[in-house]
Image 1 (cartoon, rainbow, N blue to C red):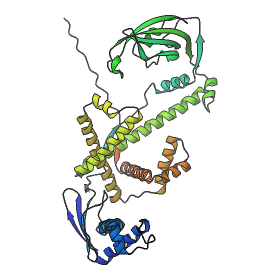
Image 2: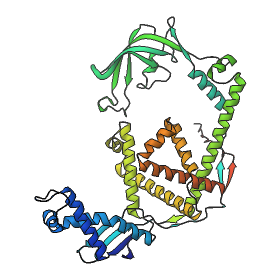
Image 3: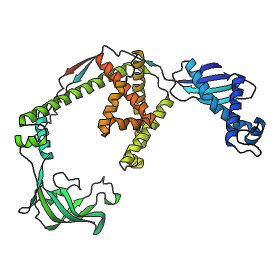
Image 4: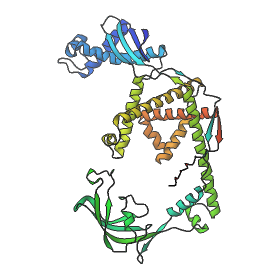
Length: 445
């Protein structure tokens, strides 16, 4: 087999391949046998019809197509391997000249990986602002724990407070017409954390048990229902139940019910440990990001537009799928945001994503970084914890979908390269910069 390479625009390589006549003829004859196995030809059992009969029955061109489908994957793979082409797409045939008894001439094209020029990526020094534990973090954590174990107490001897939970009947009207879906019976509503129309929950404070009354609200201008945007509405309300949240005191007895702690001090020590670990993890992530950002800035690569376009299409599809999962259509998004601007942002993200991936692959190659079983095991453990399934079940699911394994392998290599960069560069954790307070000048008249 002979192969001639020609570099075309950007990273496209044209391969002119000559397959010896005997190999091409063998592929043709094998195709005849395969086709004769599944076509019905009068007077012959399947697989027994002579070549000339099969040719008359299905046509020579159909047989050539079958022969090429069987022959070319191996031929193209061999051509790529022998010429050490680092391809990023499947090769595709643009033309061929196939006459049985003569050499087969095939022209194919393939896109190769763009060449990355690494700048400095080791021995760099970057500064990263510390992420100190906020002064009120301990209090917030303790309050969250107490609220998590709060109980509710039915109230019958007072009016509602803005911190109560109520059960209500309600009916909504706009311009005297009942709102479709704007009613509820014995509906529970937390007055302190309501996601109802602005002003709705606030007007329920100060009301008594079994009291019936009307309130007026205005639907927001960005409300999802076009017919209700900006409309004034009246709701008829009845208070069926009032309850208050009883938050437990922070005592040794309380913390003993929440976990393996005997005293409040033990609980606080555990929370402090968690907060410090979270600080360290945040600083580590920020350090990795800053180092990687600097390495990317120092690297250069010419990315073909065709490659960016494919990645942008993939990102757009992912984005649309996420929207659909939330019940949001692409049309709804493009009404709120200019579609051209949205697509440009996706295009820019695709370019960044490709460059990041190419630089990671280049560093892995230059530094001879290879995936070990432990690297993949770590990713499996993360997925197992995130989706709360056993690693054994995870292996079975991934075994059915090779694409997921490929994606996980790429993520594991990304992590390995980022760890390598963090270990081979200098990071200085510095005090966070104080935000400049804006001073307002008040003019005395």
